[in-house]
Length: 159
Image (cartoon, rainbow, N blue to C red):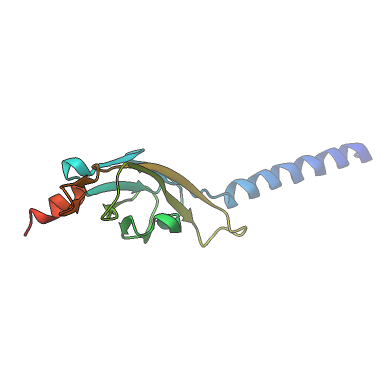
């Protein structure tokens, strides 16, 4: 005859093994990676566009959103700003700098990349932030005639 404590120990062992197997099978990960880790737009050099490569480092299909804080939405355009990626797949995102016409000095902001999965029962996801620096030209005043930033000088060269 099997002793009661032996049955109890066997039951606990089986329950523990079953729980671990269940958790391992239902665990999924949402993950995001990006390169480069920072962006710098040097408007004095005429650099207005850069690309970010985003990778799904997770093990499930995820939806990604790329955005910046509302206060900087007029300064930076992001295309595409939302897309889906399968595991291990990458997507090239274009970031375009649209500086204000009469501005000088540098502007620092962050681009956020957020990933979420439809399979996440808790609504959890992953995200990273990429620091962005916009280097602008100084405001030049030519005796009250026209005031241009380096951005407007580059645009004027196209006309």
